[in-house]
Image 1 (cartoon, rainbow over the protein chains, first blue to last red):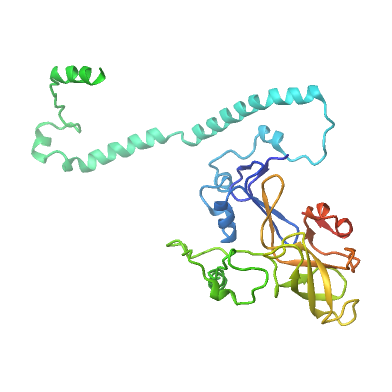
Image 2 (cartoon, rainbow over the protein chains, first blue to last red):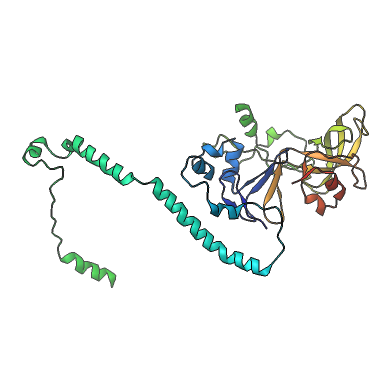
Length: 168
Length: 166
């Protein structure tokens, strides 16, 4: 049993799923589901289709080179069965997954660095330009702050009693 | 591109065609409508039946062969089945001449075939290897990929001649 990768979206194809298409030049294309298969038949390039892993790698959204990927390289030479080796591998797999996930998160964080400051700057600029949409200019002259006055609403006690009745 | 999609719009209902009907696919437009907005309706691949033209992928001399009977199978032959065929096109000097009735083993079929692990395989075209009544191939070479379903059907000789096993 071997877990293959979908040619289009690069997700794993588990046994019993998907279609395998053999072209006449003996190249085998495996697809995880009909969505990928139909996109292939439409001759779409996975590097241009936004939701595929190929696109994400090419456009720098996901990390491309990492030592954790070396473990998943395809090996064509079968290994002699060794019980200890198998046991160690089974123990190592979740650890490697955890490391890979933390590295991917770090990559994502690095990519999104500076987003908060950028949003802040844009918000400030928008407030300066379009405060007239929410605050009349006459009010602005009296009170030149870019925030709206806070309105306090009194919540009556009766509502909490109603909730108690509903819970019972 | 538009022409290929127009040809894909003709869908052949699988359930309606038996192994013996000769009518054109146009008459059998089924009651299944195309889903709205689905201009690229997929081609329904079906069995290999009477009048199916197949490519010959060995060096027996024939080039194109038309199926006249699918042995085993009410609806038609699939990947790995044997058929009786008539040679329609042949190389000028080959073991097999035009008009001869031969047996063949389907080695590539555009219709998907389920594998024992649950997945499905499909090839790009319909291809056949000519054999004699005993099942031994007439030619000495086989071109292109062949599936390993042939091993279960006991066509081991074809597998040994094949360049690539899918």
